[in-house]
Image 1: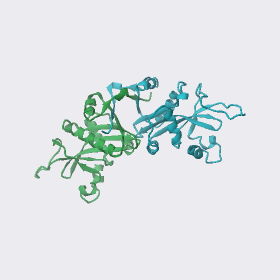
Image 2: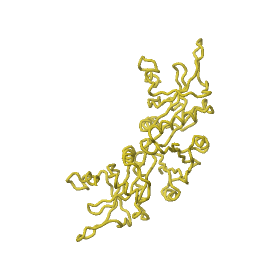
Image 3: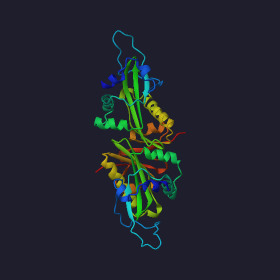
Image 4: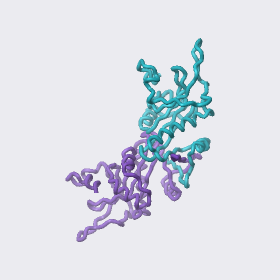
Length: 183
Length: 183
């Protein structure tokens, strides 16, 4: 996988080369599903870490999006969208030196007033454990740190209550989210 | 005014120096209100032109936003927002070599899939003449030219029907626009 190649292209251990991008976040019941331990070695504790690193393996991201049933998008365009997003947030399950991408979100912004969050995804194996909330809190913390005062998103009906629980309001003062698609 | 200084900083006539940024757009009943003709010269026909030029005089923009009653925002942040917007569209009344900013809109984007339109404003003297619609059509044409497939905005209740008339849909398939503000 190209990503791992990039990630481990130096001989230094991961934790010293990437500490500026990764932040550990303690999450209760972080979940072990999908993780494997090498035969003969004792199983290692799994940690959940968050990152704003943009150098995400696009195939691994596609796999994550496939897992929640999203339509495939051209990787060339996904790459461009990531490059031009204001914030790219990813969530990883880390066990020893094995890392698995389990969540993703990104935001566009004018860098001053508004940010709009897109493509929030948590792998089904890791849903229902508070990790979606943890990922969103991480995103909001990062946006707040950039003095963005208006964070918006467009929520599918089944996740409106999830975003409400995080303090998002739908249609405040009658403001309506509207969409236009090319004919 | 700094803007005019910048605009006319060369000795070449406006139309030859800025043709790549300005596009004339024929609009019926373009309106003469607010325009003045120099005493002793015959009044000149007013034209409406559109531009994606970003070098907008911030004080002139502030005056336009004041005219529709928007809260003032720090010019430093407005400048940053314009710099980091994907598209900046302005609408001008041109009479001879006099130009007046009468409309504005901008969009953030990931340059690939989504764009979100912000700060759509038309001067009250020029409202009710189809110019808001003309400005939005110009914005949509520009975004479509960049292969953006999903154009979004957040509409105040009194302009929802205006955007509907342009083909925008509110809450398609139950998707809700949601807002989060820092505590």
